Image (cartoon, rainbow, N blue to C red; front, side, top):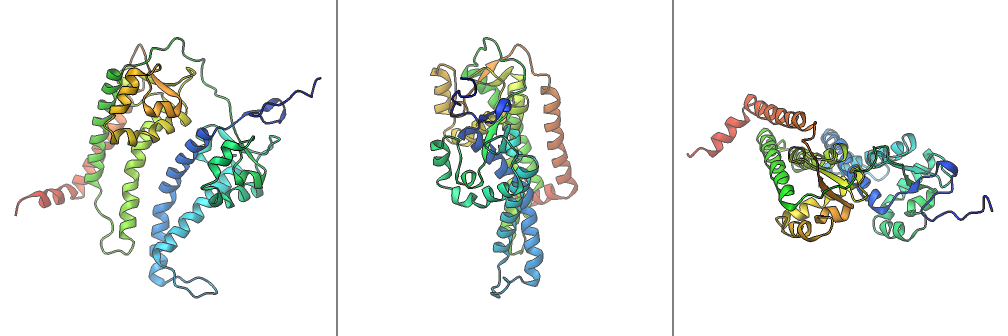
Length: 344
């Protein structure tokens, strides 16, 4: 009968605007992006704030317990991160990671997530660290503990890109190696320029190690974003652009932020093994997938011409490297390094 049809378990009974529930893979990718965003936005300001209050001394109210600068910095960082999740999910329907992965936090009937719901689902987040992934896998509506308490679900919006590619030709490991080497050379130049321009900020500061770590955090985050953001936005890094390759999902649709984040997240593990297992996987698997592709459900295909964004993307990267070197020269950091290397 009309109106009595069974609703599939992966759908939300919210009328004609229904969207599929987000998968565990989608939510992990969004969480990785949010972790990077929070680290970049809040860690360094938290350290500087703790430095300021550490000079005058801070104690907990009612207990008169002196708080160390490191504990204060951690508390400020966690509070800022909590506020980030609550207000982003309340006002925008999702954090930066969720928005990039096309995810939204809603009520089971499709209504927007309210402030109280966002507050409750994030207040219980620490309790979801261990059981959360298992609850997502076992729950019919893919709800972690915070979702169940707040009565929310996470959905994935449909893609707006063009039609899927027709008859893609998967790239060989030799073609992918050429792109990887080109990316490695470009990023090595940028990393060296950044390290030359970055010297320890700490000195005798009590939070010196944390300050140095916050400054160096930008480099691995940039390297991660280089692969994930460019493959999600353009389907290719600069190396792939010039070697006529493109990352696509196995359903032949363009690569999205979920797939790009997951395949990049696995990249350090593959680098640690010199990509030997991945080369074998690309050579012998049906869809020529490396380990990161298997996790992300993606692969790399060939294209007839160089990506139009390739030249200007390479130009931007070169401009950043030149700017870092110029700044290092202007501030005397190159001279300091040369003096350290010179024999005495």
